[in-house]
Length: 155
Image (cartoon, rainbow, N blue to C red; front, side, top):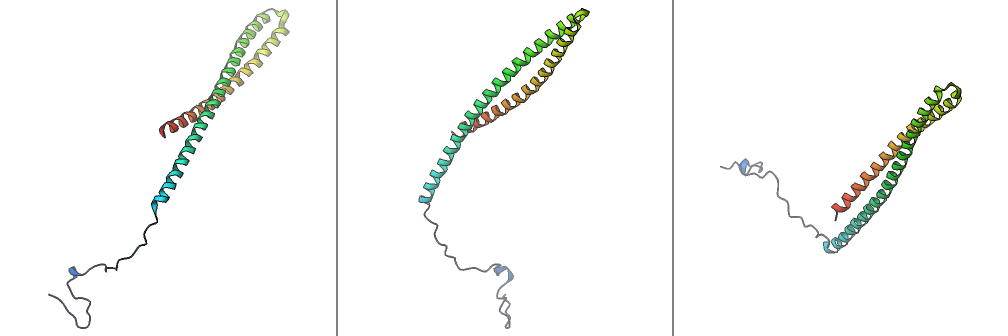
């Protein structure tokens, strides 16, 4: 059953037969540019960038390895000096107490204990310096490890 209104021709069919969206004429789209030439140059550009990044990572890895080695060497030197300071501190402290037991050499004992105190302060400074150098060496080792992993992963 069709409902026809003579005044309005909007309802020619049932509502279920009506289209919600009107159909549009097909649109002509211009064709895409030739991709073969663009893709080849883009691919070579990407490969060049990847090679450059790999070279930079390898250079960074080597630089960090050298820095880490230098910091490790400094840590060993500072630790050796600190150990020598601790030993001399103990020797000066023990001899200072021994000399102080004889009342005659009291000024010498005071000088020895003052020197031991100064060496103790230097030892404390050495320990703090050793901690800072160890942290820097560890930082460079981590960066070196990260660079090495990235270079090996990208191969």
